[in-house]
Length: 362
Ligand code: GDD
Ligand code: MN
Image (cartoon, rainbow, N blue to C red; front, side):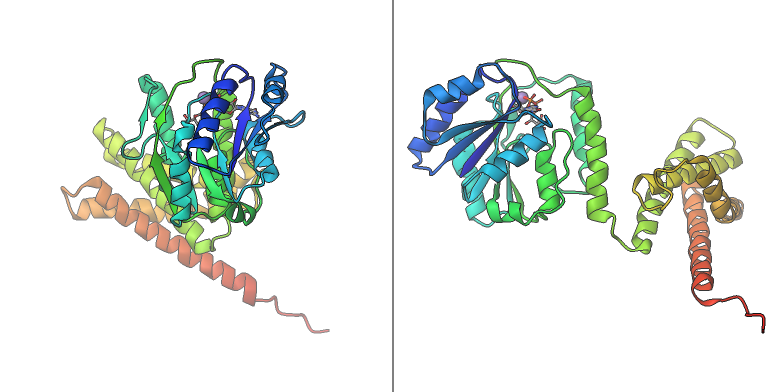
């Protein structure tokens, strides 16, 4: 196996990591090479690896295009092993788990994660509420991509053949594991519980910028996985989320005793706004990347009739069935509005495809 270790200014941790990997290698008789991928730290890492002069250990120094994900990809391409592993340099990930990772791959997994959150996994970070929430939200946002408990992990193993079948690698930021799961089409993703230890030396390189890059990365991954879907699926994804926005707003407004008609109207407007934003964000609209004011006006015009139908149906249901939950009436309205939009767009598409202006003779 090739163990790829991205490192930026980790000269203090590296000797301990190398010792522990050497011990695992020896104790389990593993055919293991270790590749430290250093982004030009100039902190003595190169010298200390050279001084060990172990035949199974080498260090690559990158001088351009700094970044965790790209460093990992470069290390994996350089690796000779049948199995490729990625682990942090700061001793957060226990090398002692390497045989477990290998065993799961042998048992048929496509991708194995050294996981903090699988049953039995633990961490020594004592996070405050906000940091915890941040991590939870980040994990939740990855749900449409994979169902594992710890998709953010930087400790994982993949077969070389699976890695080589991957296409269009284009990661930004930190989540190279997520990139590989999606781009290599890994289906059997298995988690091995680990204890995640806080770093003892040096500082974390996970900045706010890296965290914001995660959103950009997610967008690319969603597009890769869902971008090529049929218009109907797109309609359902965007419409489904819009319905949630509608119901959420309605519930909130009713809870603060807003007048019912106003609440219904505001909820519909809110969901129109979110539909527009989502449609552009997911790249479903050809207008993406252009100025947004005119498209917004066009979108509002195109969906106005459906919105009015939605509003009228909701109020009708509320009047016809007094005491009904407003959310239920709103669902009826959404269904009516959506049905109209769907039929109208079919009609327009049919006209565009089949109706030609009558030629004037001569
Ligand atoms: N070559 C290179 N270039 N390595 C880098 C770079 C870079 O630009 N940035 C960070 N690294 C290396 C670090 O030296 C370390 O070995 C590893 O990547 C992880 O960086 P840390 O700064 O220690 O990140 P962390 O501990 O906050 O994040 C870890 O845990 C997260 C889950 O909480 C990583 O494993 C993440 O991938 C993981 O999501
Ligand atoms: Mn770390």
